[in-house]
Image (cartoon, rainbow, N blue to C red):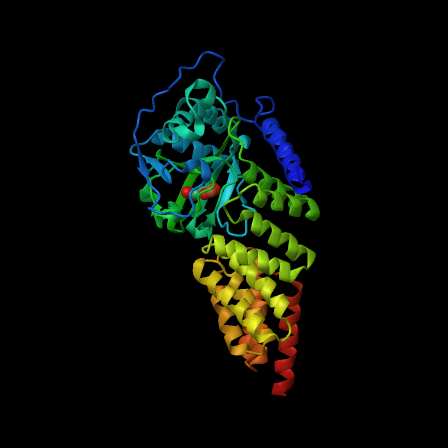
Length: 447
Ligand SMILES: O=C(O)CCC(=O)C(=O)O
Ligand SMILES: [Fe+2]
């Protein structure tokens, strides 16, 4: 064996042991298995599920799912409207909603673990209907019989709220970190406009009514469509199997865990191993790119993100980060590289029409190039997308707009922009300073 093969083998052994520990019955938050010998080999699910096949020649089918549909949605409610209402009720009574940590997320969530009644409801729901539904829909992945069904584990589960009136509108395209995902619609389609689960390979959004369930491979790219009016609630369950270990995915996940702990070198090695182990998606490339960005290695970062968007051209965040890396590589005056950076930002902005970050980056780049009118337009467009982003970030956008307007000698408009920054985030230091400076400048030039 070569050294690198040995290192790979050791890394795989390590994540395999972690997978076994994480899926052992001891320590599970949700007890979803039946008493030994008590469960029949198959449990009938009382409703049909409509499968949605991958399009022919789809290039992004997760390895274990070659024979499976992209997703399936129950043709009738699997849970009653009353059950769903009680879940929403317990969540709203607790009112522990928090934003998700992902850049692309605008919804708010609560962990099912923290809601005692939901938690015991979910354990029974998994045992009696969700796991049987997964076993019937993905037989090659789950395996046959009671033991395979009882090997499924709830890795994480949360209630999602997309309240359009609060700017909690959508969840951008992503891959879940687990083998399988179930999404349960908790309220009626009459209560909101838009919404639903967008399946990227299908290029469509599936809207399903209260009590119905959508199941899919965690790895398939998907998202929560924007709710345009009203409020949508859903319960999502992320599921792994003690019997299904996927080395490449486990290595990439472990890379993320090490990176978030701050061990960039360990993370970079794990991402390389994930690629070596045959990862077919962009995630380890994005992870390597992130590590390189954090280390200030910008050409390396650009190369990683270029590979990531080559694998998944729809990955808006990878395009944005490619632009960030190229802007650093090209600074201060390598115009062809800076143009490439601008194109990357524009591509990201077009792919995710609700995300301000690429336009903010584009504006900053144009400002560095002294193209202030285009920078102003980019910041304005970013602001138009900024409902629901954190206050501090909105204040930054207004501040950037104000600075572009100062460059264009549009001082009164600049003052308005700086005032909007303070309004967005009254604790924003620069914004308040800018308002004062702008006021005294306008006063002295009037005198
Ligand atoms: O809202 C949906 O339908 C999708 C939710 C989702 O993808 C997630 O929470 O990971
Ligand atoms: Fe998801």
